[in-house]
Length: 301
Image 1 (tube, rainbow, N blue to C red):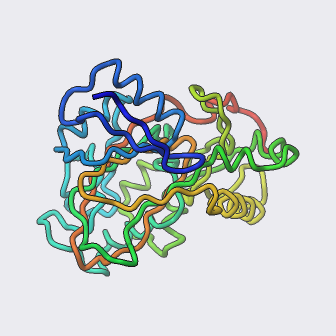
Image 2: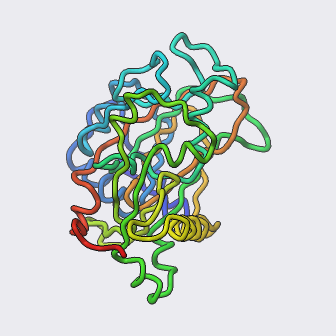
């Protein structure tokens, strides 16, 4: 059966059928998938009931995997190279609403791009739906994706020129401060100091330009902090207008992957008294964004 790629949104997202990810992916098939990934930004693979090993094997085709820090300091349910996007503790029990792990995970409801707070941020993420709450007619638990390429294209040219060489400081502590979470262990402060990233990125494969924003973005380097935060908030609001956003409603067995270099995403609230289990693998990019954009040492003032 040939690979079938069907658009899901006018500017980003496609559904991929005709492939069984339980089996090794042939090089020519992977080439089709990779081309669609660069073109579409978000790929949805329905009906893919994967084991962790199968998810890891497919993810590794895109590059080296990240290892996840233990942000909340509690016993981890999964191995370190699989992020636990769930509401369960290490014994498989639903977390209490006031559990610090639940509080930390509320940050996933903010618009963000994965690992922009790391010196080398994420290239792509792959999220596999293993267990979901009972269907709710009004929805809940969706993941929304914003096309930062289309948002960039919609900006006036004069505005684009003013943004081109700006540098932004990112920190996991910035995003979590917005939801009132500050209960990090000392090791996380040592592992994840603030980092600088380019505000504007040029995708080396698609040739397109995009904004690079996130709730992790703290301020513009060389600007007064409040002025920089005002600009970041303004650009996030602009880039998340409905015409730039695809909303994915999950079905068990879905595997969704997205390009962190040119999209933002956020999770939506759900009934957290029911079990919800998704496993995420994250592929690292090859360098810091400033090195990629040749902005090291440039002035953002």
